[in-house]
Image 1 (cartoon, rainbow, N blue to C red):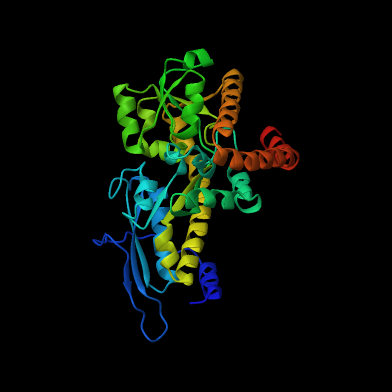
Image 2: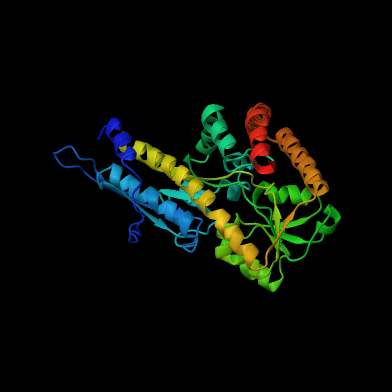
Length: 369
């Protein structure tokens, strides 16, 4: 199948999402193609960080599998497994790197313990919103820089989903100042957690399946996950009534399809292109899905007793200072982080100036008018 044919098939529309049966094989399966010119039969497994209960997120993952199969005429099949089905939700990078599975779908902020620069793939606190992040990846050289980083781990990455701008989190009690946050235990992953710690606040990383129980038992006092739609599914409003905004910690969270580099390079060119196109389509589908679902979900939460509360300007300003101090510290300690940060930060300043002219003025017009 030629690249032109693949692009044409993508234009035909989005396939329905279906659950594939689990494949019992632990390795890539190669079967020679027939004389008609069809490609080899290849079967892969995909480990993910997401439980099946998060239907939109896991559904988009399955959409990737479906689309790859369609684009390769059923010759390249991928079976997605929910969190814990093959690997712990926060260990997908290591699992793909070792070749335990051929590919995975996860968020890079689960991998910052491997290299802090991974945070640029998922998004930084006080950083870029979803469309700014996409502009940096494809217009500002970001994807090339990230692929250099992933290559050191034997992995190829593809942006493959965005939750959009997130909320700030659920709190059992109202907080008005940074001092009131100190002493609290807050569920937050990645560099956002490091920002909290630098500001003197306790933070811990929990997978989604453990957040609700931790809130119920009181082992954490607050938690952020994503936004109204998925937070409602997890039931976080059951044990915390105060819903804070904005989501300073993840203004544009991105998920990725990651592939074992050695196995990726063994694929026929058309199969590699199918992965790229399916990931790109998934990115758009996930962002549209969250933006479409969050408004109605927020209203349901408010109707059920949730109180919407803005972070104080003092809290946001102090956390922003802590974030910028942290980035400067990381850049001074690690050349990889510094290389990506310098590119990212220059792009951030440039697009902030532009968006303050075009988007900010329009937002003020429609929201305040």
